[in-house]
Image (cartoon, rainbow, N blue to C red; front, side, top):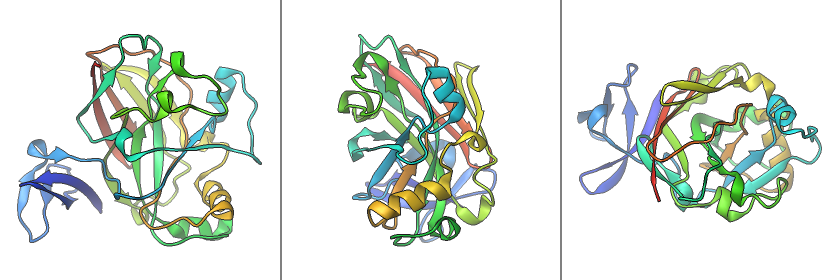
Length: 250
């Protein structure tokens, strides 16, 4: 099952997405066309969001970094940085090195503290997609991404929906692609993750208690492509969906 968060008649609601993604069923049974929906980020207000940097072997090789299994690069993201499916992301005029980053997102479904790798995936309620844009001109330290890079308003599209974990039997075999104006700029696989989803949950739960609704953005594969205002960016993950975003002048 796919669950989407939308804005409908003055309030936020969660809707069930049809198998063909053409219609949404609202609480109470009313159906609306997906094409007419105002998509919101499927993020639970107040949830913690953890993001991974340098967590794909091919992307690390591309950038010249060695993988780190024992000390992953993790940073937090604030709620204002998210925007929904078909949303607009402002591109600063001086951001000539702004590029998209397709990421698998694991959504926590139950409290998790000191869970083992074997237990970890049982803590996941579902998966979604994020496009965690980076602006390299603003990057001061690869190992400590600053707020101007990773917490700007509306610079992390997420969605369109959350797919139940039961419908994603193996999160480590999913193809990930990014297209800018239909040109393929990222083409990778979750198989290339340095710390897989289970490993990330085990690591994070050793540090803090993960709560229902918390999210983990698991990193991006290789492919650096600088974008311009007016570009349409589509991030797609096999078995999850397609996340569409539009870059606009800031």
